[in-house]
Length: 145
Image (cartoon, rainbow, N blue to C red; front, side):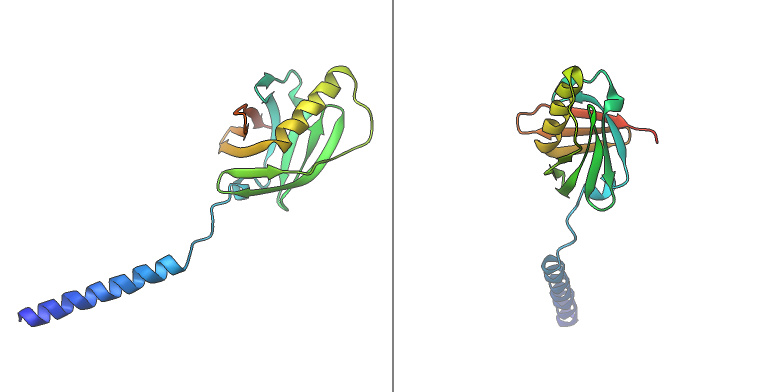
């Protein structure tokens, strides 16, 4: 009787070990915050720690095909983005032609710099935060269509 119980226990342990080894061999798909970003639209509240006075002039849309588009001052932009875990890379960004002046030029520069220097992203229902290496966050709120 003890032999049967011991044999049964060893069999269970053997199968559990084989199942665990198989699970370790088959990695699950990596988490990609980009899957949650796709299809979302945002307007800047702050860029690299500085307030944005005209959020409608600093927008970003995350398109389903791993592209971004938006408004930076008086110019439009488009470019690719990639994510893995909570890491993000945006760019290179292509800008529309034209010359922004004054505050629009400053907003354009801050917006593009915030996007291209972003390394980590936080996403929560009503907020998007892009973090750069210096730790200066850029905060975005949902944009209505």
